[in-house]
Length: 490
Length: 76
Ligand SMILES: Cc1cc2nc3c(=O)[nH]c(=O)nc-3n(C[C@H](O)[C@H](O)[C@H](O)COP(=O)(O)OP(=O)(O)OC[C@H]3O[C@@H](n4cnc5c(N)ncnc54)[C@H](O)[C@@H]3O)c2cc1C
Ligand code: SF4
View 1 (cartoon, each protein chain N blue to C red):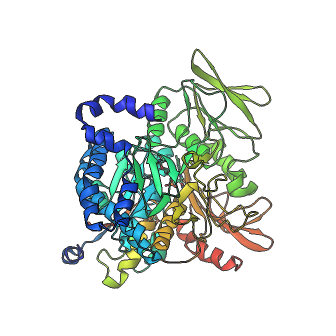
View 2: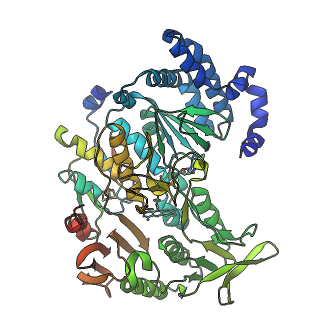
View 3: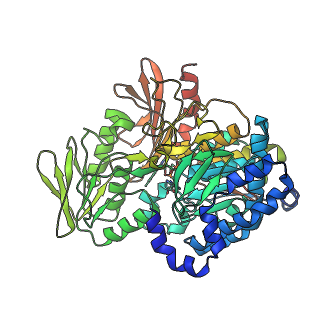
């Protein structure tokens, strides 16, 4: 990882960076700070440390990938970071837990979860310093349009931006984009970035989301795609321009949306899925069957109950998808949409419990002063036998972020969201509150499935557990309250 | 910062072609937002809500899953 970065930026660094800056990268500032404080010369701290810190950030600025970021960091370097260290020092000497509120917050992952934590903290009056670190170089953007408007070509990429530059500036935070966290040292409350720099925190929020899962055998084949990032979406869109036959592997929410969007572009599309219905895990079998009809009517070729063995190619280009029973489903563009895996590799060895996500308690705490939000968080784990819940949806990311910001500032509630997601396919807006577990009884309470405008209730053990709506948004407003009322009081 | 915001009496804007009809805004601030009956798309009832609605509107800005609501120029 480090070599990647160096390869990209080496010329800049060697010409611009000062020897001090280079040295500072290798020197750890924190231990010096603590020793200065312990010998009771606190007033010197800022003066002693500031030069080092400034040079670290300047180096950062040099290596920063976009010009925007450079400007940002350079401007913030002398002010924010100096106070940063000063607050850290204060934390080290202070024994009162309450002073934690005033310490810095580092947020890793600059997408909707991470950014919303920053926004909610400021909203609630948090005046300490904030650092938001994100591996992607784009300003924080939203993912749902990537399989919809961006892929269809109806939105330019810039429309996916979550907040504009002025709004980000108003948050008064240090935004480090194109930077990846590679390690966490909990004992020292310090993270290491992919450029070798370290960052100390008072409170850490892990918001690193998830990566697209892949199929074995695809490596190096042109025409095979996964979809998670803006760049993925743009690359897939580019490939769809010249595609003759598209195969989508996986009829989860993402695969179904991609199939619908590609079909909307007029392309022949085959959707291959091991289960008997599309989105079966999310919609159950009855509504899943209605969704299958929707896709079939719009010309998608559905291959259900069809597990996939792998992707095949010739001369470096994909030729199709091989099913487990040996049939080749031909396609010159193949999209693999077989789920996501939480981005936790950088936390290996950190002491945090990782089990398909960062394991957290019902306040979303992974450890003392370490939180997780969004797709990466497995929250509500109360004991060794409790798997907790991990939600991969847009509303959970924001709700959990708002919750965590409040918890950092001293609220002590329990995070118990009503899960919610939506999906747009062939002019049908699907909305689901709660869940439709296997074996649930699904009853249409309003409208009709044939008209593709209905509300249905899912009941398990005689209790309302999920509400599904198709083109019934205004009718779905009470759904959350109904589910809250039906929830067991724990 | 807060004084400038008061003085400028910033108003709320919603981008209805972004709205995904999730209704979080209506739940958070029912006196400020509503949804269209036919497709659930947001309807702004009050672009300059009273101070009493402030916290609720900011909650809506944060929670809107389409980032479709903006309020003035301050951090939202
Ligand atoms: C194509 C697509 C369509 C979707 N459509 C819908 C929809 O219609 N409805 C719905 O409810 N949900 C939808 N979702 C899901 C929703 O977008 C996610 O739940 C949401 O993005 C989660 O936000 P997050 O901030 O937790 O994680 P992410 O959005 O995954 O962001 C995590 C960020 O952290 C960065 N990162 C990772 N590791 C590191 C590291 N070590 N150091 C620094 N940065 C790092 C990543 O680069 C990324 O930018 C969709 C998702 C996709 C991909
Ligand atoms: S919360 Fe956002 S997406 Fe939902 S109805 Fe309101 S404006 Fe639309």
